[in-house]
Every structure is written in structure tokens, then in C-alpha cells.
Length: 503
Image 1 (cartoon, rainbow, N blue to C red):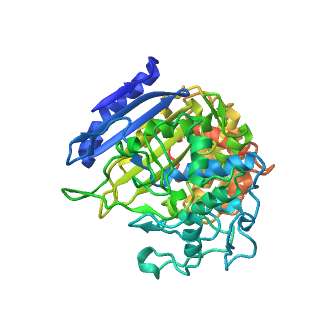
Image 2: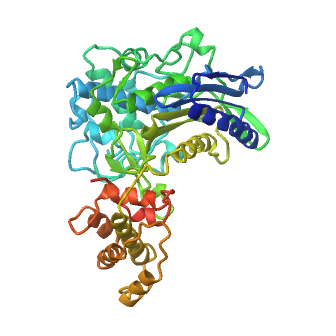
Image 3: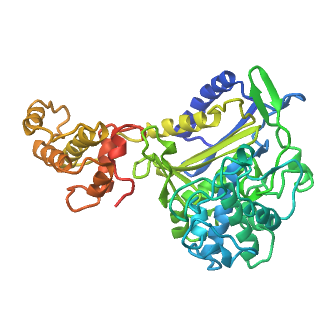
């Protein structure tokens, strides 16, 4: 470790810091990461900043807490925040057609309606994925660059003939889009009543008032657009290819609202803290509490790409990605990558007002590794098991009803065993159950089992069941029971049987 700053005397916080001190050097050594820096918050306050390895290998410049990373897609959270500031002020509406606020027209040729601001905020405009318009030199104005991109029939990825620009009708499917988020940045630039550029709006209304002293959102990560003091603290990014660490070629994003932030981890974590505090930090309010809550509430499911068994395991808020919705350790996050040199990840857990931001100056090739994700997962696991064991208390009837419903769903749907489950088998397993905790209710188990066993053997039928009057427990109780029964992994077979939304 090159330098650390400890900002807590709380025993929980110090325990987490000590755990990370032991874990990070092993991870860095295993993955041969040139440099990494991190900031951690707990119980609503920054508790630790640290740097490991090198900010630049050739000069042996050490990575410090104040070293500046190239953000990649973490920048999208600022673009989304800027949009919601304008929504809060009544300047725009999430349901406005984007054409109300753009200097050129955008139409999805496959769609039956206009694209709305909300569609872009949840990646459901119908656009295909794209590489954020990489360029070797800083480009033209944002409006000019986006007009060129929307005129393309094909995404420039994979040689420009593999992915069409438009692949779904408006609002029908989730596909992550840099171009869509960059369009939100242009809307901010055009619609803000101050008449300032997008970078200036973010600096004035988000970064400066939240106390982000080592951050900016330039139109290009280039010394022409960044103060000398900040540029001097930027890191060199590397591609690890076998035993060689190859510095990245400077690449600028023409769709820069999707990924051009320069920041240190301790600055970005202030945005996460503000979001957990319903839009306010240090006496400055970004927007009303209900706006902050809306940003980190489910708006749509992710595609099945994110689940080995074809069931979405995360949900999309307004820009933010949501994990473990409805569980005690629910979190929101966004990751980033700047080709081929940096990986960033940030995640926040509202249940304990904790957050982490980590940046590694490495993007491995030919296959990327999960360097920063492993760090964030480590923090999340540590926080989860700090939960009091009595956090969730449910009645034996509720627990047993959930047991029966989930078990029947496991047989009928997860494993797809055809035909009716023999009633004699149900009674036999009830008779043979050993109660070790005093929370067994055979009658409730039987009701839950039979209710689900009688459903059509589909996931949709079970999803509808939890929200219907036929279920004796509601969606939130079903999630709480899953946790109380020892559920931990959102990739488990049984997790897929739970309701995707609460209520």
C-alpha cells in the first residue's frame, strides 16, 4: 500500500478496512494489476481511501488516493443525475419525446411511437450497443457527433456490418446503449435554462456543490480540456497481455456524456452517498427525495444475458443498475471501462449506508478479468454477513408457507418435472420433516405447496401468483422469507421463483 487515509474510529469500519488491507494485495498480485485505488464509506461517511501499485509504471509514480482514473461508464450516473435535476425543476419530463429537446430528429424506424427521455434512461429506445464513438483526437461538438451517429445504419462495432443501429421497437427490450446516454447529455445541454454546456452544467450542479474537488467531466480526456493540476494526477492505463503490461493509446469518446469523467474514488463515492441520503449531501440537495428514490427503484428488468439460467438477476433503475431488489442487502451500482486501460466499479448498499468505488489501471486482453468486481463483491459479502441474524423475523406460518411454495415451484418449474405431484408424496415429506428451530407449521407448508403445485408450470404463473390474492404472503414477505431461510445467491435456481418486484 502506498498511502491510506483513515476517517473513522468505529469498530465496524476498522474491521472492514483491515479485511480489505489483507485481501487487496493478494488480488493485485494474482491479477498483476499495475495500480488500484479505492474509497469506502460506511454508515453514511467516507471511512477509508488508499492507493496500491503504480499510477505509471515507467516513472514508478505511485498510485495514491488522489490519483485520477478514466471513468468509462461510471460517467453515465452523472448524466442521469443531470437529467433528473432538470426533471425535478420541471424543465423536462421523463415522458417527453426526445425530439422536443434535440436540435435534430431521432426516430426508431422499428418503433410505433416516439422515443422518450425515460426510454433512454432505462436503455429501451431500441438502439443496439455501440463503442461510444472512439476517436484518436478530440472531436466536433456533441450535437454534430450525435447527428453523424444517428445517420448510420450500422453500429461501427465489429467492422460496421454486424450490428444494426436499431434492433428493437421502442420500449420492447433492454439493450445497453452509449449513444442513448450521450443523447441524454445533449438534452441537458440544449434544455438547461442556464444555457451552459453539458460539462459546465455537471460541474456547477453536481460536482462542485457535492465537494468533488478532484473531478471533471470534460468533452475529451485531453490536457486541452482539463486543468493542469488535475491532469498531472491522471493515471496511465494498461492492457495486460500475458506477462506484458502495454499502455493504452489515448482514446477520446465522441459520445462523451457516456464515459468521459476524470475523478478520484473518494469524489465519486460522494454521489453514491447523496443518492442514499435521498438526494442530499453536506447541506446541498440535488433534487427532491422522491426523485432520488425513483432513480434507484426498479424501472425495467435486464436482459437474460445476465443470468446463466435465462432469468434476469438484476434490474434497471433510472441509469443505475439494481441488485437483490427486495432483500436486506439490496444495492445499486454502475461499472465502467475505458479501452484498453481502466476498469472502474462503484456500488452502494442502502441497508447500512455503505458504498465503495474502486479503479484499476488495467483492462486485460484477450479476455478481461473481474478485478474491480471482485473487490466490490468482497465488500458486499463482508457487509451482508455483518447483518444481525435477527434482522428479519417472520412468523412460522409465513416461513412455512414460503417453504412449501418455493419447494413446489422447484419441482414443477425449475426442474420441469411433468405431471401432478402425488399428494401422498407431499404428506410423506410433511410427516418426515424435522423441526430444529420451532418455526415449522405443517398446515401452512401444505397450503403453500398445493397453491403453487396447482399453477401452470411457468415462471410467469408464479410471478403472477405472488402478486395475486391467491398467495397468503405478499412479495416483500416472500423475499424476506427467502433470506430468513438462508437464501444468499441471486443466481440460485430457487431465486428465479421469487417475484421480480415488491408489493
